[in-house]
Length: 278
Image 1 (cartoon, rainbow, N blue to C red):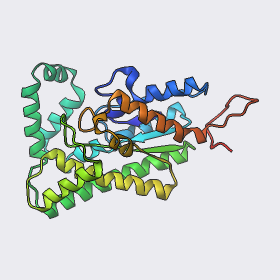
Image 2 (cartoon, helix red, strand yellow; image 1 turned 90 degrees about the vertical axis):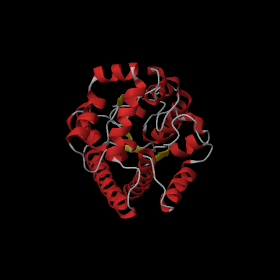
Image 3 (cartoon, rainbow, N blue to C red; image 1 turned 90 degrees about the horizontal axis):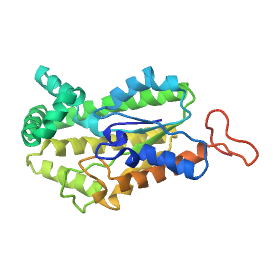
Image 4 (cartoon, helix red, strand yellow; image 1 turned 120 degrees about the vertical axis):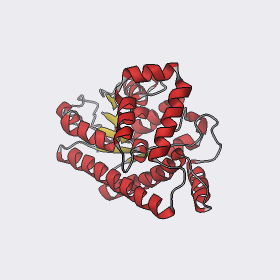
């Protein structure tokens, strides 16, 4: 089961270009009896994923789950009023809104920018940004640790995936993820205004550090998709979504991380839950 946000679901991708689909095909090509299910949802954050895991995913009795999430946690406001909640709900639940958005994308985009910039102002005092980022970090950490606890209590192996992002929606920079994050941090420390996406990238960088820390403490494998995308930043089709080729590279890396859990001998087919191979 591949848990995640729109990058897992395959926003901007055809169905056969998503990394869960490609991952399943890779196992088929190697004659390994592994079924891969895409459990990614647009606009989900780790809180949504945690609820999905509790109420739905565990009922499928998966042999292994992957987690690829972080960007939506950074964008979800620390404090949000009624208008903001309505705007975010429409964006995540209304097909009518999405269809209208496609028709009048410029106007809809302008409205969204106004809403998000109200929720995440361009200029924040250093201490306020630090405090808000700490709240986001705590929320993410608690959700991820809860996901780990549930997976362990059900005997389900878990693999983390580090998520790349950029602030360049179309004209992608040649700088790496770390270089871009440092550039934004330097800009903020000079007292310059930041866009909401730049604020989100600062927060997202911190969440990826938290993910690495949890993986180390829990002795969980982690696939570094930031490193994969850094090889060619054109593998991003938006701030966070991946091209079909990028999904292929990610699927190949995930396959290698999953293989140690597959118990398979020449004499008998795999039976029961996946376990680390000996």
